[in-house]
Amino acid sequence: MNNLGVVPMGMTGQPLVSDSICIPGFDPSLGIITPINAMMPGISLIQPPHMPLELPVVKEIIHCKSCTLFPQNPNLPPPSTRERPPGCKTVFVGGLPENASEEIVRELFDQCGDIIAIRKSKKNFCHIRFSEEFMVDKALYLSGYRMRIGSSTDKKDSGRMHVDFAQARDDLYEWECKQRFAAREERHRRKVQEDRLRPPSPPPIMHFSEHEAGLLAERLKDDNNFSEATAVLQSWIDRGEVNRRTANHFYSMIQSANSHVRRLMNEKALHDEEMELAKEHFKNAMLAILTQFEQITAVFNASAKQKAWDHFSKAQRRNIDMWRKQCEELRNAHSEEIMGIRREEEMEMSDDDSDQGARKNTHLDDSVLAVQAYALREENDSLRWQLDAYRNEVELLKQEQGRACRPEENHVQEQPLHLLHQSLHSMQQQLQSLQEELRRKEQELEQAREESSSLEGELLALQEKGVNGYTAILPGDKERRGESADRGPLQTEKEAMLLGIISTFLHVHPFGANIEYLWSYIQRLDAKVSAGELERLMVRLPRMFRQELSGVGATLEKRWRFCGFEGLQSA
Image 1 (spheres, rainbow, N blue to C red):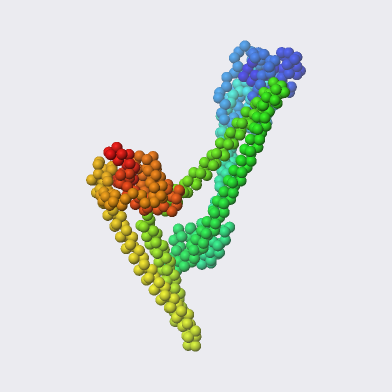
Image 2: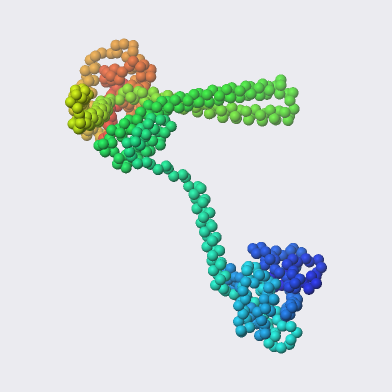
């Protein structure tokens, strides 16, 4: 068996090995067997399962019109070949007889395929180029045959052929062209795929003009085109289109964008309401499902009683018990989910209450002043913008009046000019009043800041006098305790009730609590109680409550502690 893996057949078309073996690829005109992989390029020869793996190949004599081909000795090794070049369509044929003409060579190899060109040399060899690559494999099958021209026994009319791959520039060029074409097709396919997956490009932003600004102002008022219009407005501002001449246009467009804030807040409130309704609906549905689970569980419990349980078979009891367990597991899961929802609602309510109490207790003098100052600055800036706009209008009216005005039209144009002057004067007065109020607010803010900084310095000084900087009794506490000790016992029932609540609360807080924390807790029980009333009550009872300064640096705070048991032990 040679490298082609085929079995030879006789000239009559009958197999030489066995009549039961049918081998495709036999060509009676050639007297040779065409390899399957040569007939079908790209498909390798698959050995039938009933054929032996090692089968000797016997080549037959091939008769042509002008010559005869005799096979070589089957015991000799097969002819060697070089490595196949890429895209090879040309073969080298050596060992030809001296009298072999180009017509005889064409007659012999024309049966292997379509021949494009034959280049014959005077030294008994030639190159044959076929139209397809698989035809080269057919021509290689003739390697090793001994060629005899006619019936002559002359040495010049006989020779042993050797067929091998030939490396031709034309074959290599065509193969490279095919490879480049395949690479271009692959690049084009990848580009089409990337273009299909690439997100669409954003629309181009038009250049600024007064006409486009007017159109954009109308689009900003529309809810559907608001997003696109704001993108265009932001691009114009980033490009630097805002100047003294176009400032009024941009101010009106920014004002139009700001008008959507109320709409967005209303939409948010509407969505929050829908979410609350959905939560309520979900909770009601879960409660209904849990109720039905309870009813099913009651049915299983009734079935498990003795008077009904004894009448069921073992299989029925087993199924009922299994169903009851599954129903209880599902009921418990739904119950835990409902309990989780309720816990979340309670936590939200407690957070809201604590936030409200903290907001009521916090002293926001500095922050309130800062907010008022910021609001005054904003109003001052808006008035400046309006004042500049009025000035521009006055200048434009003056220019128009100075260009070409008839004498009889002067009194007509003086009236709007006078009105503009009046409005300008009023705006200037309003601006001056706002500036004075702004200065006053800023002075109050500075005074508040100075008072807070002095208070922080006193606290730091008291902290340095304390024990290791952790706790220090305030200097005024002893005087207040001495003064309050002379005031006498509790006066009303409400004070006695507050005393018990405060004592219990501070007893469970061994490290103390500040007055805001204590007041936020008591306010849930009695909303009419104020933080000052609680502090005055605790100051009157120095043997039960003690105020200490705890913390270091920024964490410094006043805390009240319960010391009633210490007074009993000392007594």
